[in-house]
Image 1: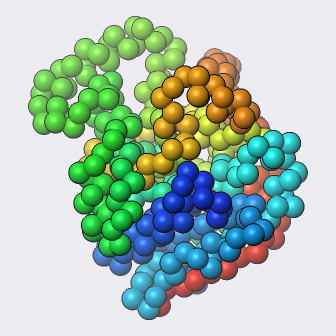
Image 2 (image 1 turned 90 degrees about the vertical axis):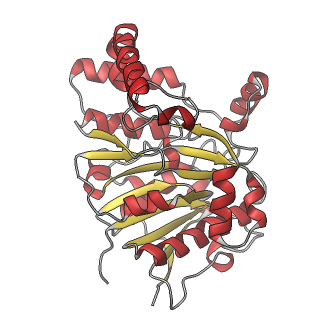
Length: 346
């Protein structure tokens, strides 16, 4: 079988996480099928189903499948409960997102691998960017995530869903391609190119003075990076994928970007139109605005402290180290044979 240029890796389970999960997953798969036809995308989709609930159908049986008109192959890899229950925090964390993505990374056939999430819709401009096939092995790629109202799920056609998403954005997350210091401003202000560039220039010098040694890490676009991190297959192997920690996934995705930075890789951010839309739901940690609710949420899911991640990385930069060495050589369970089902396009 011909190896694709791009492998798209996601993970999920059929547990209705966040509400309407099956609808969100269906929108994601249908969207990719539609856009891969539209742009003749040379890609495969890998869905890692981690710890599937025993009382619900497998994802391969309920999600859309490619037809003879499609060009996208879909692979399902099932990681059973026997693997999940090895983890100490497994009772409070039903899905180890980054470890599951590692399973997909180690089995990806593509020259480049995009790790994203199962409730994402890609702007056509983003899909056009993915289809250029001009990515470099020493660069990792990021894009903005726009949270869109879940009302888009009432529509069946992708064009209707993406149109609704564009017009019902809750917030934008991420840095701009060129204006890395000026962030969090409405898209309208980016129409004033020269004033914004001037503001970015002076703000940049302020950041360098204010942040000191932390400046290099602060310029990396790490917020919501679990929704879109793209780098070469070789680069993912160099950084040993995501750290396989027995913890909730928050900030684990950040370590992957820091690891790429330690390896000397450069960051490139897609422009603000080449974005992805996240179908908003309530159970994600970023949807919690109340600090007390956030404390209760995190208390139920042991996780990394963000500043500890930064402190460890600054120490490695100071000592000239390039790898965290947190994973075993068989990370991603590369030596374990999992049940796999593949649905090929015509």
